[in-house]
Length: 159
Image (tube, rainbow, N blue to C red):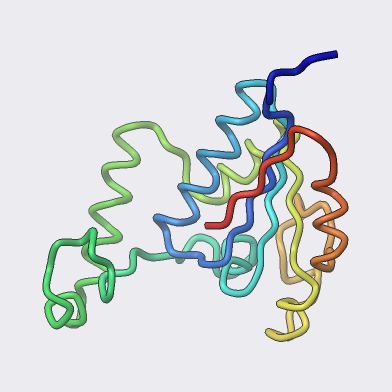
């Protein structure tokens, strides 16, 4: 049967838990589910902060080294700039009814998005499974994650 290259599954790897990366990842996973496409997210390295119970509601915008901020690096590094940029971004997201990170995770999980933590990163940061959200589907090695993504019609995306 011909499927004309149809996307069946999105495997998204989140490596940084800046607010803009987390929301990009979550919006893409949610959009996949809305289109009937399976979606799985693999949280690795600093991306784990997006699913860490004590850290997920304290994510921020990267103001230093972020060319999309359109400000000199020195200005972005001034005290309070990150907090200001984060606050402004959160206000804009509220206007669009984009849910906070914790609520978005609940929505993703309820829609069938699988949420995986990277075993290597967990070991490196000395995290335990109980440090992470209850919606977590498990802890995988990179090899296990690749097995999850096997099959025709699977696309992997690194954020």
